[in-house]
Image 1 (cartoon, rainbow, N blue to C red):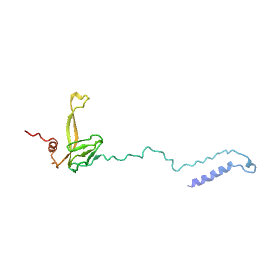
Image 2 (cartoon, helix red, strand yellow; image 1 turned 135 degrees about the horizontal axis):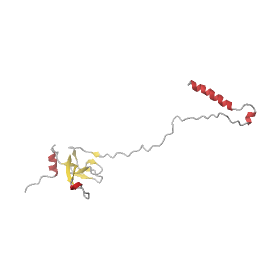
Image 3 (cartoon, rainbow, N blue to C red; image 1 turned 180 degrees about the horizontal axis):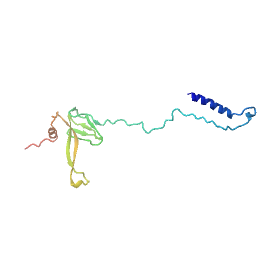
Image 4 (cartoon, rainbow, N blue to C red; image 1 turned 60 degrees about the vertical axis):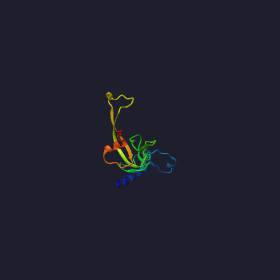
Length: 161
């Protein structure tokens, strides 16, 4: 702080040395040998632009009802992009792949092992690929915890005639 005050006096005397004195000096342009340039720095630099700062609203995708919950006909079960979950018994598909209940009942989720070859694509050495497909079902009655019951409810066993 004190060094700044000392320097201020030196700057003032250097500026006074550049000024001519007397009456004749009023009409005379005298170049100064020591040119003093004062530069003022900004306390904050100018703000730049950014590409961030905007976002789309949430699409509310995902499950709307859980396993074992009671649903009415027309209730949304799952919102998705594409067929992440496939419709099972008592479930319909909307044009945006939304799964909804077709009847009153209870929701059941299932992972089903499916084997199929891809059409038009040569599979490796003629082997079929194994995939798990996820299904959502709605049954009119509450299902027990056995997974075998779930498959038999979708496809009832054949009756002997």
